[in-house]
Image 1: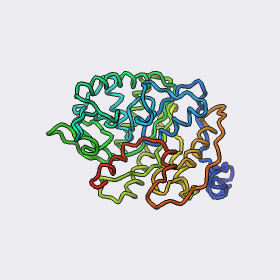
Image 2: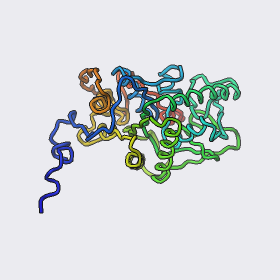
Image 3: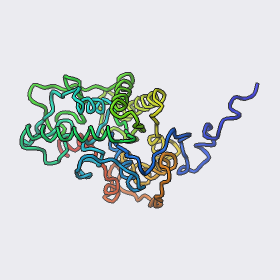
Image 4: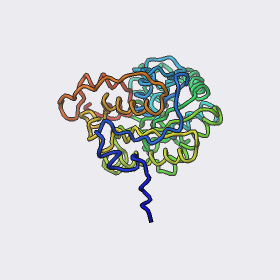
Length: 351
């Protein structure tokens, strides 16, 4: 009986596809089911890492859809000013709210300084608002911009970031825990939940179905953020808690790809965290992805998904030694991402 692996391509073998090529040349995409053109209107949403994709799309001459004016340094430069959408449940509830299928019971929280914030995007704008009425008026306009994102895009790139979530009594998923940026009204309680594979799968598949209902031609590219958790509310150490979270998200993304022909998975997580990278794509804090890592990810993305991309990436500069657990100022300026999750540590006493 002949060896059934004899006719398999090189990318099916670890030695040929991962061990032998130099780390920067490993390309873990076997086949892209579709490509994007400069005429596409590409929407971006998700965790902090999704902001890099938006920035590099523009640098490559592709159309990054933006339906709401604002400062990318404040809102992350996503397609609308929704800020970080860490979980599939957040995405689903945002879509339902935009189309009148859900109304959050707790939509306005108050900061210690007395200013009010939109609980679904508590750091946009940084100044907050003077009254709850102002918050709600601005959110109505924001939801109109959200609808334009889903209806006008020809492709949506969504980066899954977390399984850990804070849920309101009505099921609404919030980007940060109460007390990190602001507090919900007195008497309102949120509960922590580490979403399992069944819940994440259901949320993600439902969100993709919602998009297809309002925009049947839109394609979807799913990625998993390689950025570890800032902190965990689970009983686990933050390292295995991170691996659990990313594993669940990766499985859910794969099931979506197998369910829908118009959905693809792009392995940004594998490019950054795989053994071939030897850890060099992380900054000294072992969490932030360096510009070299982003360039490696976007090089593979361009090769497979951007038809006719012309941008040439500059060779990465050698890393400099800095104090462990910190990010040097130049690296921090280069990263240019807005990450609501980082407010967890920033708000701790003594910080």
